[in-house]
Image (cartoon, rainbow, N blue to C red; front, side):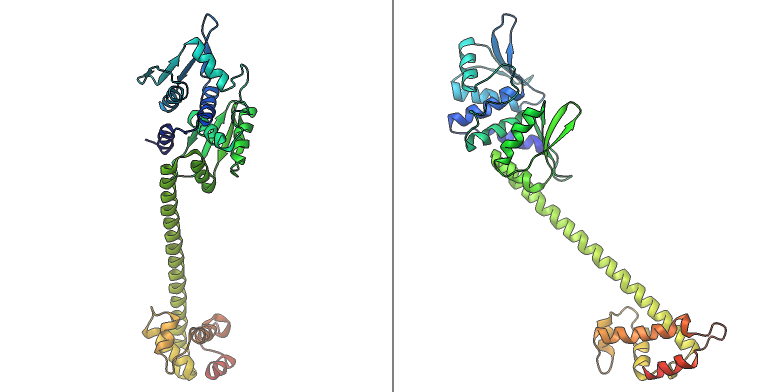
Length: 316
């Protein structure tokens, strides 16, 4: 089962205690599934049939609990149908159904608790959610701007910012921030799904943090290795063309230690010196050796250092 299916499965089992909230959720389901139909004789009846069973099951449960309707549901085709005229009229009056309108009557969802139920019914009917392991995305696919505006306004009452985009002939209200999706699951009453999402968020954040740390450490190791390799190349060049005996005691000591411990860090190199030297001191001496080893202080053809460089190396 998809994560979206798990959320809807949980919402199907969640039935509000207050009758007015049951009516608000039922109103959303009847409106967004176009469940109110007219037969060949002009009589209205209720029929809910969707690709997935969630909406039909919830509509069946709400009608049975709210209006004491005894009916059957065909689970083989996810179909719920009820056609008893007087009861249907009673249901439509309760949800304030209006022919030709594409929105739920504002009076039905006036209170905050009823707005929760309305959003729950809307999500069951026209909502979906992506797998949070791949990305965060939750949406309501509305038929027109009026439906989208009503859902967007209901979300805003819970300080959830839903954005609207047109997709073909539909208006889609969507959330892409994990915080907003978590809050929406809480509003709808999908607390188990909320906890599952939070656990996935924690694991995802941990993986990202570990990856960043590993990448950072790998970059630092590469930088350290490259720097050590360059230092050793400079020192070997100086040893061959200049000689350690021409270096000052401090530069000669750090040069010999670097050759003896090619994999050591600056801090470790400082521990091998006598007296011990900090990282900045070690870095300073190695940088001076690097300056002696670069082409700017070497005579191109002769392979020896000029007089200024010789004197500088002895004084350092």
